[in-house]
Image 1: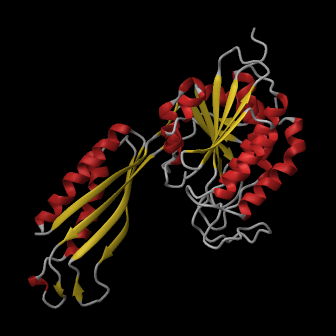
Image 2 (image 1 turned 45 degrees about the vertical axis):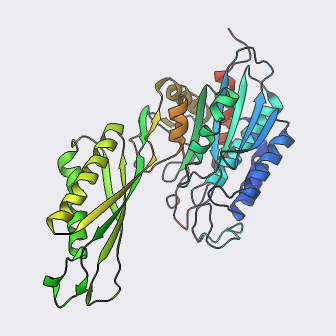
Image 3 (image 1 turned 90 degrees about the vertical axis):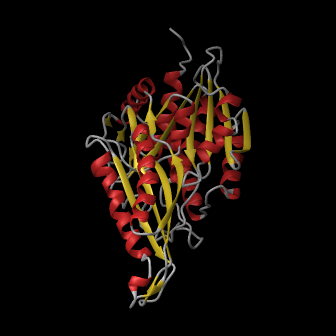
Length: 390
């Protein structure tokens, strides 16, 4: 079944919602306007239950079908937060707030799920219950975990969970997914190297932390090249190198390094952490310095479950006729992973056409994919919980 006629009719209305959200971006958990709009619309659609404040500022809507004796409950998730970026699109509805922009398309995801919610509340052509999870703080705040910890799955009896994300560079309306690891875990580390500062003209009287930290940066790359199976996927990156000196003739007393570790394998995730925590202090010690590692676990690997992924891909094919079922995994992280750890489910990409990649100041969400995404959610509900059980 292709895009639903009713959703095609609603396209201008849903697009207007999206543009309004885009003009008024909010960050992390601080989403009073966004979450308020979502809650008000869900109530206006006639949802059977609307609860705000789940996971600090998440919103949950519940729609019961014309029958519920199947006992089935499936969840749909959309993220609501924007990014701390200055927009450079030149759009008529560009962000009104300097330093904030919907540069990842969460305004589109939220609008898509709102459109699906309106349709499902009107038709209720399914036997079971749909739980709509509008999530805060996907961009680094682990809002997905916060909603799970606050009872999203248990309180509403969610049995399966599904979500999507727009994907620049893929044809508009084309879906892509895979069973198993789809997106990487993302952990962070901060390394503090302490030595003995001094005058650049007398390095022999110092313990040069800049030199030591440079050797640590190089040594970290040996983890991937010499400790990880060549067929595994691990990325260790140092993104920040900061000394406590700004002068050209001063050898710094302290240097701070910050970076990330990404992998598609939970076992390699543990190994990478162990090697960093062992390698860093030993490298510093070899040069007479001291190094401390603060290692922080972030988002886990996003792992799609086989049955749910096959089903979600079938529904995507019905809607768009174009699905890649074996896309190569990608190394960005996604906190929908926490929901997939709590319940079986699947995460799909939806082609967003020729636009700069997410998190770019000139990124643009293509409104043409709105009815495609809405129809996919609706098809999931009606096919997973058919009104007439054969």
